[in-house]
Image: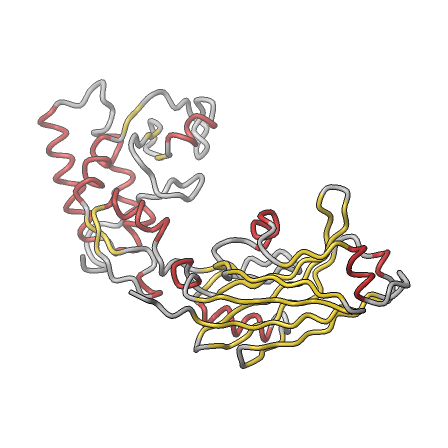
Length: 306
């Protein structure tokens, strides 16, 4: 599909009302319109085709049925329901006009994955492409920083640079670590995110979180590890965490979670080392004033026996 040249996508949109009302279109006219749109599609750039098959209201790729108003403005089923029979673009009455020709053409298209620039080279039929893109391993990751709402997305190298330069996250090399968390008044801590550290280990990257929140009525601290990559890769690794003091020790061993899972989801699953505040104060010497926790950790790779 060569970029540039031929009819513009705008011209294509404006041509739809002439042949997509299913109360007037004959089979012969529909076949002619499909041929016409197909020719124009193949003269549009890939980017133009992606835009044309996106709902202009919610910006998501459309599944049939495609709808349009009498002026040719298309929209998806969900947006049509939410529009209360009024075109969001030009405010005319929507009616029940199907864009049958565009549906047929979409069905015949084969397009590259939306994440082609991130490394996916698959060419797929349009409707299979939409399903593939939701699970494509090359789709961008959300920034794993939990201290603020961050909208940055990208591949792993992009996120590592972003965490270092924009969030000032500590970067460490090695598979063992020893962190000390100090808070002057432990009783004041209700919700806090104190540390996000990135470890480079076995040529991969891991993120250590340490947070304070409440489980029901019980204030707790939680430490857990996330893997910068896919879930199937994360399962190749194990990690352990240990916290203690005053002759007591609490340990945890688990599998790091992929950053595809948000830190809130991991927290909600309680998939990490959980320390009730009363025990954390005991680790700190028991005076209830200053919190001092020393967390020791190790990451290792599971060896396959198959």
